[in-house]
Image (cartoon, rainbow, N blue to C red; front, side, top):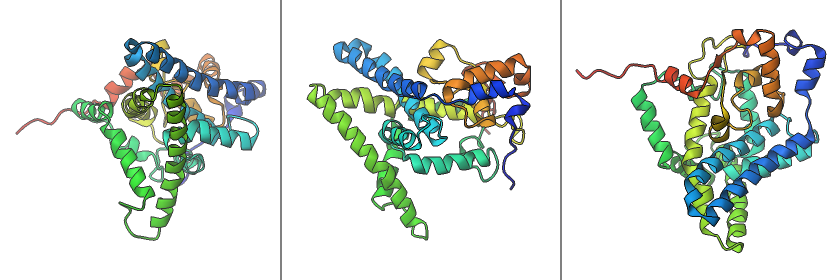
Length: 317
């Protein structure tokens, strides 16, 4: 299968516009990292001060853990910092590793996704191909996410693979084991540091209640929602303006579901090296020119979920 169709940036932007929206800024990259970790620290501090804030903190921290995935994602595209070593080091240790991912392996996987978006060779195709599904099916998935079942299954499988368990014998068995170890060992290191730091501060319990709990519940659910929003039930898998979706968000959706402009996924697939903090501006320029009418754009995540759950329920015989 040939690679997915691509677009030329200068077919949509003037040279001056393109130079502006594609420019990487190290200070903005640093600000993104500081904002992610600073908001996590603030949410933890609020709940340590008063447990009444715990439910809100779980939501905020779970969303910032998705923010760490966005740090990793921009680093995978070389868009976080201009210096490659700094880009990769911060992208791995402050983005990928604490959530159980290896940046180098993710980069290889993710660029394959861009090359073959929505084609049979797309490694992410399984995240969208099953849609639309029924509402009851999505409800079951959401319950598994919010009760920690999804997280537990994924994490135990990853650790088992790192130990050489559950891997079917074959020529790629050792490679799978090595890849799992490259993710698990940094995950244990960074999480061990976080646990030690909270313990030294006298709040060891916060690691479980304010780090693992958000990751195992709210983060698992919003990752699913994000995956659905990005590629499920798009209108044309072969059109580079319609094989990924942009979803409009308000303040609370941006805070709790889709932080750091991750909702501008159509623009990201069209221009994959644009830093995340430039995607909203790219969207505004395209909107002024009328280009967004040709793109896959949804008014909100509720609309996306309605489309994704449009399959009728099975009728009992």
